[in-house]
Image (cartoon, rainbow, N blue to C red):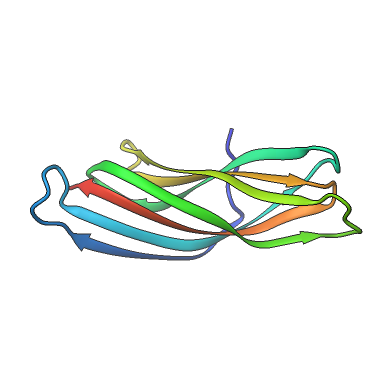
Length: 129
């Protein structure tokens, strides 16, 4: 089960009309930063989880969505011999019932006192509204 961020620190979007493309009439460019505390559990293995959060409202059909996320803030409280942080994969999904475009990012931390604190993201959505 994905976890949610503590806060969406910033979010920006640009909606562009698209012409002369079958099945698509809108393109959305979405960017922002989310804040959360994701703590590692061991110096030997990566703790892996998925964070999920809404990035836009879409009342039509999402034809294609893609995006990326990057570590924006990490820390390690003590001495680190083998700490590691990662964003492994990003997915952009549309929940037609709630009309929300969601971003899911698989994150990982190695070290018992290592944290991921913020992610920054960008997503592109092609839609028919």
